[in-house]
Image 1 (cartoon, rainbow, N blue to C red):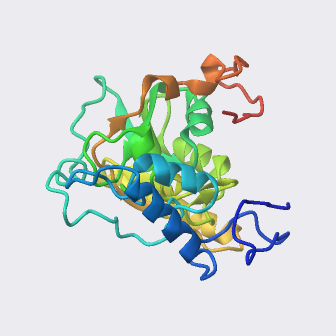
Image 2 (cartoon, rainbow, N blue to C red):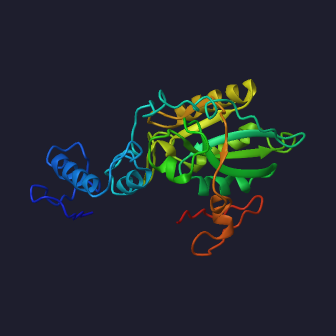
Image 3 (cartoon, rainbow, N blue to C red):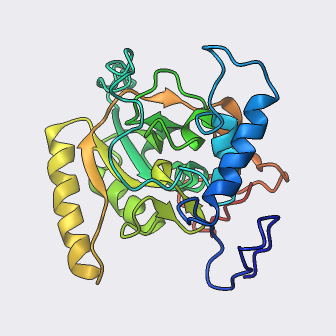
Length: 267
């Protein structure tokens, strides 16, 4: 796919990659110059955000492949300076309904993942949200900045008498590619990483055994993280049951139990 941008003449059109990296020497002076011009256009105070730390700017740059959303390291940019990181890094303190259990899964964009779990018999409630990060009360814009290290997750409430944890794991593996680091299809960024977040030792054991079985089937290394569930931040209401409600275009998809219709993920 050809990509043409309004960049200096030293940058040529490429047909090999749809992404452009800020690490290319020819682009650094260009974007540094933009930053200087923008900074000089506004009064500077101690509270004036940096061009590169602005969530809106980072989100915009990420969409162009120019931002920091595709970081592959496991160290958040501001974890050491965040005085409130203990809260999001703490356990999920919410309690499921009587007789029910929780599980969290990260498998890329949470819209399609949630619909897949909605269709499972024995699943009594699903919610999409953010977890595993370092910012308290994050917004969708925050996690898209690539700086909070949150993952887009689905918290599943299920009745273990009707649905065992292994069934949920099967849905998880079937729904995404667990071998792509911080990426599912065209969605790139640490928020799209593959993860199973357990609440009990039994869930942890089942997750590890399930991963080992999957690894024998696949010919590439699985990068799924298996970690204790941390505080769950419910996403904005418009994200909840997004595909079942029809999304932006009003094309509703069935969430009926046992439905096997293909899941179409759209914005």
